[in-house]
Image (cartoon, rainbow, N blue to C red; front, side):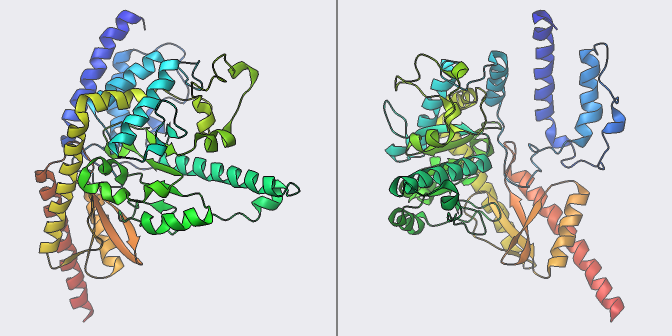
Length: 438
């Protein structure tokens, strides 16, 4: 494929992508395939001679799409959102074209510097304490990780390294092994200090946890993977109160801030806590500016060595939506979740199982776990909408998360009517079984 072919095929691919997203509502949200469906549909080995682009694109529709769960369908209400927007897709195309591996400032200065500035932009949108911002000469700063899980692991390893060195400095005879066997990480059944838990979007009180960690010199990592995007709205910013006590903070713009995966934003108050744990300086990665104090080498802030130009997605999205556009998007999803909550509350057969704060509603049929498991099975087998469950206080609960950029009130209403209809069929069947037994 030469540049001329790329121009032509690129336009065709953009058209295919736009058609896919515009018509996604008409596709079955959850695939009807069995494990192993794909292998018989493709050759056992790579082709010796090139295939045509036309054949490949036809196979996308024939082979790939039947096995796709359509996360951006307005009938997808499972897990949490995964962000998608046209500006982010365009930025990803440019990222692929530039194709740099930004492990150091010298490897591509723009890749490093735009990330630093975008993380400051986002930190200011959240009204993070100044200590978390890089600024001109700050001690803290932000870095894009691949996921919240990765950010949590980075924080854990950095904390471990920091306390180990502190204890060894105080007691020079203390071995690393002796320290490690004494270290303790404190967590609840939702992992770490969490703002917006996965199960039910509940919030730890940082104003209670934070002072204790501060007094005891315990590293506090705060995970707001889903909910963090909402903190750009003034009415939700109070949920972040107490973040000033944290050593590190993380959330995923790739969940709810229209920046396509992967883009997990992590901030630390002291960058030396990360570089002290992850610094890697072989001769072939050194460059003339690294000792100047003027630049950042992000390989020292993460587990992998290489990294993509992910900040382009943030730059495009923030500029093309503006803060007000992003706030409106968050508010719309929250409003839709309250619309679904109202439907549930109006039906005496159902109950809401947790406070609805943002875009998630946890609900269930009043009755046994088995009844709710059967309802979920009917919902997902019908493949008109897609939900996943959780367990709250020992009970099996259904989660209804507002996810798609394209979802509207009408989709939420149709989803509820579908759930009600399946529930009525289920309850009637259960009554019939009871009558037969009696």
